Length: 265
Ligand code: HEC
Ligand code: HEC
Image (cartoon, rainbow, N blue to C red; front, side, top):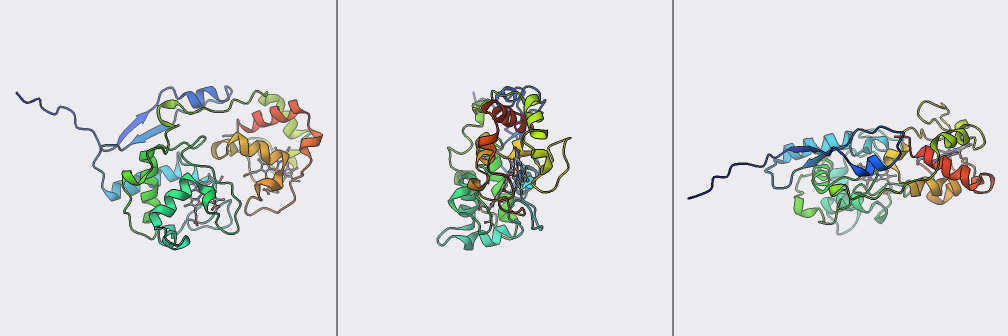
């Protein structure tokens, strides 16, 4: 007797991870919505569906728009209009697909002229896209002026591994975010140049309201101690962020400040 195939795996299974330990363990004061995970493994997906799913990820979970705009310059990151066409000409011997995949998984491998090396690896926290999501995202980027030819096999098996199964380990900042907010507004003087959620309004430096969504604690910690060492955020003046916080802040103030910044998402 043949066993009927009872269940056909849907092409777009949207799996909501109820308890996603990475978010749950991070900053207790912040109630983050558990992120939805897209799984396309084993599904029959048309290129058009893939591009649509990728576009959605670009605007939502990918957080790409906090840095990149399509058809708009002057932001933290390059305008991605036409990336599907130009990606094949950027690095000799590399196809558009290969360049786009490298841009997402190893952003530092090629630095677009005029920009600092500050793009996070998008398969690692805080963005932490899985393989299906990377696949869709590459298809979307290819569709911006190029041909959609990416397959799931093009995405390295190791990509997004940390995100799968909630195994991602987030560095837990031991500081007190409330005390850190006070450092931000008083002794640190950060508020003179930065907006941070409900507080501040200065446009001198980048708006930090969503900094923890797009950057690692490591980047934030280094930026405070050595602003120039991480490069200058595009669209902002060089040498304006003071370099002496490592001397003026106590260790506790520094850790509290970082803990506060990690709540900004
Ligand atoms: C923190 C800001 C930031 C975030 C978030 C970010 N990027 Fe970037 N990205 C950059 C910067 C800055 C560059 C240019 C420097 C470089 O080449 O690494 C860049 C470069 C790129 C490039 C190469 C562009 C070119 O013209 O060659 C691609 C493609 C790209 N990003 C895609 C994405 C996608 C897709 C996302 C969302 C999943 C994303 N980025 C998220 C900052 C960011
Ligand atoms: C006098 C103005 C000024 C003060 C004060 C200042 N910053 Fe900045 N900050 C800037 C500017 C301008 C940039 C963007 C240029 C750059 O990268 O150096 C920046 C960049 C940053 C970034 C990177 C943002 C991103 O989008 O990648 C972080 C994080 C940051 N500042 C945190 C702080 C903190 C925390 C303090 C207080 C301890 C502080 N800043 C004080 C001007 C300032």
